[in-house]
Length: 73
Image: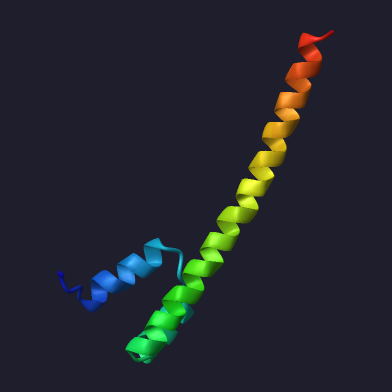
């Protein structure tokens, strides 16, 4: 496995959407705390994805409904 330096880790965390205060908490923690924080943040992002997917599903259903009604008119 290739090791990452602190700058690379910070860039990755920033790209993932972590703010400076979150990154500071990450830096202050040991390996167990860092893993806990990463797992927690991953779960948060996944929940956001699921919420957005639900919205997309609703819109897709609406598009399908409108399109179906237009065909039958």
